[in-house]
Length: 135
Image (tube, helix red, strand yellow):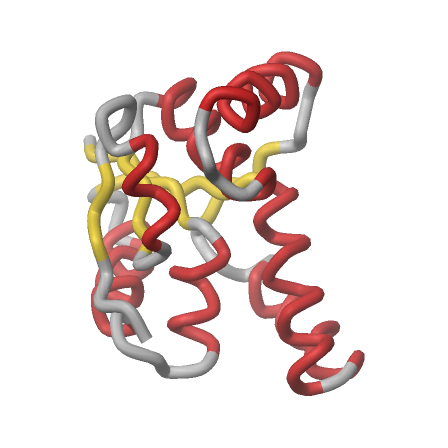
């Protein structure tokens, strides 16, 4: 069974119908059918929520969170091990700290990150990346 980690870029692509939304929707549909597993760090979920809040307001952010809770995506808490691995990635690579949580989760769960965020090029040798079109 294939495993994928969604970062903020990929989830926002679906929410705002940006390039790459169709591929992320395919993954969501496939996860509903049990074809693969989808994961997301709660840190990256928080990144999605604050982005939607800034762009569309608190009500839209609350609706986004409610919609996320219905998706076939397992949210992982930022436990000690994940946080320390994300810190090590941040110390070693020029990647945003929130992105380091997605990378750490992908490494831990042997999953590919689904993203269009070019920062992940820094860690592409450590983890598999499925590239979405950039916006």
